Image (cartoon, rainbow, N blue to C red):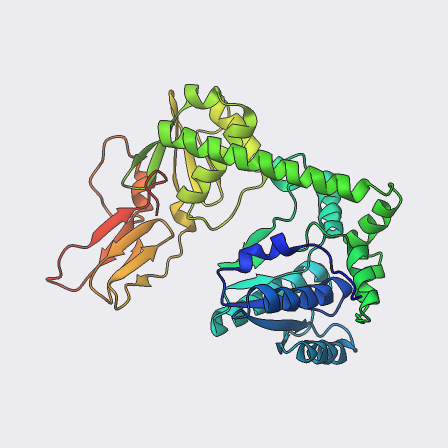
Length: 400
């Protein structure tokens, strides 16, 4: 009787609408199991799904090229296409190598997916990875958003990331691979105590047999709490935030001060992401600092965070774009005549028009709108005689 694989059919359900997805497979036990499980699931539940296996050769170990070729052999045995992507940066960084290699790995795979029509990337993060992540973050933060750990569905440069193995323990996958006689590759860096994750993994092994499950449960509960706070924050914004077409919003401090601290931070995170151009995500401690500043009468009148500029008034505070953070180089309106400028404004103008920040140009005064907000508005330079451009700010309460 054939060995039964881990029961993860429900975790592959997000693949139903997809037509082509990629699998991140290094050859370790987790990703090798992902490749086998995905191939089996697709064969039974989604025969039309195209699966492509991607292996990144970071060029950090002498045996990496041979290991990538071995993954290719296993993929071919399952009838799957396989591509090796190489991190060609030289010389390789000396410090922070794991974080940089991770960014390079995801960047290469996202680039391949965009070029070849793959709409999602599957990764093999397990319950053990989740537990390790939560334990590392517990040493740094108490933010529920951070302690939610690795999400089942994520994003990298606009590419969907799906993690169907988050409920499965690594040892269960290894036991199954052993039963079906499927080999895998052991990465020596997984035993290198110079890396924080390796040290945390060893500590976790001494904490008792249920520790990983409890940490994963904590991540689930924090994810639910974060989702609830997100809904409450957006509801509060829809009722209480006053927005202006110049790209500025006003918050009544009495209403804001009456919110619990965690809700204040979520409100600020959403507002700053929109009004700061969406180029960075503030850390939890930074949001706490801004919330304290907004609710008090002490400290500077203005401050910045995440590309946004905030200013305090007697009855509240306003948030707009920090115009100094807007790239100085103009953006050119394409042939479609439509341009999303600074992730905030929709600009419709004659193709070839140049769009920059208004910056120090002389602009008519607008009641209730500080000059800082006007400076961060788009300035459209069109050919003589062209019709006036149409400029629309994507408000939080009508963003789409």
